[in-house]
Length: 120
Image (cartoon, rainbow, N blue to C red):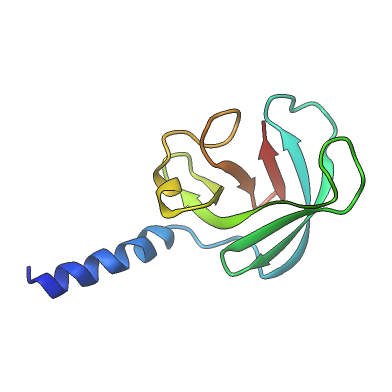
């Protein structure tokens, strides 16, 4: 393989990996809930998510002891193939994190179908 072909393939790899799953959410503002992986039986806290392409911003608009008002998390929505879940990524290597969600050190999970943002 020539050098330019190899470079082209390497440049396209993130797009191919990221295209493994289509986002099951449209651009715009959506009602979400926060859930705790450590305490899944606690009541959910309402949040709002602003989605633009693969970018998501999670916002707390209701005063609570759980989160301050305003932006609580933001990043890129990435498909984590190993766990078959959407994650809130900060850089491309998050796609290959050994662990995600729960109380791991990996990226947090965002359930785009049920509209739930999971933290520990």
